[in-house]
Amino acid sequence: MIPHPPTISNGRGALKLPPPSPFDGDKKKFKSFLRRLNLYFASDPVQFANPENRVILTLSLCSEGTAESWAQIAQDKYEYDGWPSWPEFLSSFKARFDDRTAEEDAYLALDTLKQGSGTAEQYFDRFEVLCIQADIDPFLPGNFPFMKRYIEQQVSRSIIKAIYVSGQVPTDYLDFKTRIVNIDMSETRFKHRIEGLERQAKARNPASGKVAVAARVPPKPVYWSKPPAGPSAPVRPAPAAAAPPTYKAATTSKAVPTCYRCGKAGHLIKDCPQPAPPGGVKTRALDSVEEEEEDPQEETPEDEEDETSQHEYVEEVDVEQVCEENAALKDQITLLQEQIEKLTQAVKQLQGAGSSQDFRGTRK
Image (tube, rainbow, N blue to C red; front, side, top):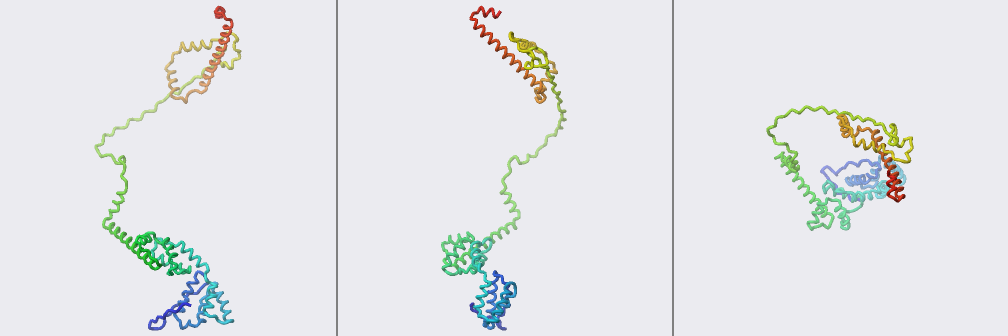
């Protein structure tokens, strides 16, 4: 049972407090409701000296939610069996509405608590509330190592560093709390002082901020600078655009293929219907090639222009003509190979005869 505080008189009588708000059965609000209920009992110790008055007032305040159903059942029981003492009623009241997980939740909240951007006083207010909910007394000397570990991890590092640098580390919770709060207040005052001086400097010289910012900008490269201003040269009119040159399209005449075996036009040697001669070598094709090399035709200006255009514009060459010329070259190579084979056979025959006279006779 909480001892009653001394009654405060204002010259008119004892202190009177308003009754607590009705309780709706929420377990998260149970301890707060019980605290306000005990304060109300302590404000009028004469009236609430009788345990039945306390029980009756408590049941009357349980008028919402699940608390109302429980109060109705308890009242019917007490009216039939008799009113219990206050400790007995309080025990059953806690067994029904006390939050049994509040202690575990308080331990979890202690693990995640941080000072953050708040002050040290705000941190310790929340810290001590969680300690009470976790059923921990931070002022006990045996709990100080446990409390110190929590505080060093959760308070600003600059404050803890200042304490250890001083060489005087407190050995109890109250001294440790007092040192942390004082250092935090000193740092806050210093920070506000610096901010005030900066505002005054900006108010006296508004352009100082712009100059400081401009000084941090790296200089621009030389090629970004504008050319020096000087007498400008007279502007000459731009020459008229010349007409685009016209090119004469390359004209390529398709040559009629000629057979180098029979001498007729219209087909190639590979398609010649006549068989290759078994004896002598037909040299008409070679003679014609030599005649073409010895007696080149005179080139006309038009032919020169056509050749120039063909060299300059490769894309205008007739692909079919090139293919036919390549086929003609292949025919010539085939014919030369046949002639070489026949000459080789003739040489072997002469070597078999074994006399220079036979060789001269054969040659004649």
